[in-house]
Image 1 (cartoon, rainbow, N blue to C red):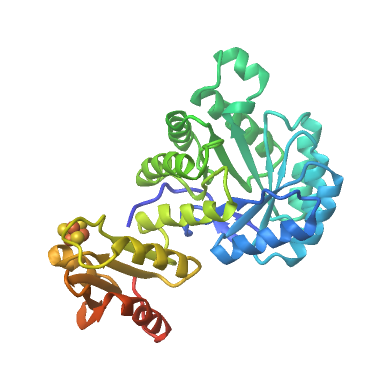
Image 2: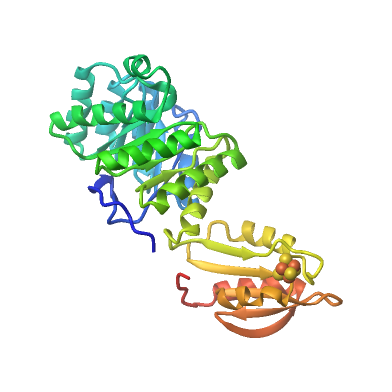
Length: 358
Ligand code: SF4
């Protein structure tokens, strides 16, 4: 198990965040918040995919009114995302937000921040100081010449001190950039200068593949160093994909003990079963499975140990009749035809087997 940098503990509603707790996966709705029905539907989709926390942008009073309706029906804590108008933070804190995300670059006057802190205290919600490389304060841009890790860290720490001066420490921080290396540098520097929990993200990271790869590289480096207490994979895509990508990143480091882990070979001419087709079907079929189960699909016996080590695994046996060996928790139990594999996996999923984290 990877060790974590020791942090303070903060709460987002009922979810505790910090080094003593599992790393929650976050996502953000991309519906019009004012359309409460569509936004709630998307929140429910994110919950079904396994999101631990959902963020919703609140740009105006109509959106704040919709947030108040949505928060009553959400099962996971909601974060209100505030830019420019601190009064939206006040409205959503009163409505039941678990956390208020504010951007130091555009939240405005100290008076506004003071009001936000007062509302957060009164409603027991945390504040995320969300610094983005693309929206740094003008003074920092003049000082550093361009967005850079040092400027983002200075922005975050200045804002944290402002909140501390108001006797508020229920804080988590993010320092996101669209540049993967700058993001890593900013989080590394911040981790050395602060013990607040850190929300990891690469911002404006691109579409499904670009965004997932950039996030996985940044998070992989940082999590391996013990840095990171909650994550969001920002994608220009269906936000459900953000949840799936976040869970897969955590699972790859054994930092998440729920969901399906598929171990499969890339296939080659030795294969005796349709590995690609089978894996695509398994991914789709079990995408919302929350139990911690490892499935393995190997095209031939060369890597049969992977199938044996999985909770359920198959490896190809005979190229002529497309058969494979089924393995269940370390035991080779049957020879199946390729077309029988899905049905057997299905019945194994329905048996009350105990699953353990590998
Ligand atoms: Fe090829 Fe077998 Fe390796 Fe799959 S497990 S890539 S079929 S050698």
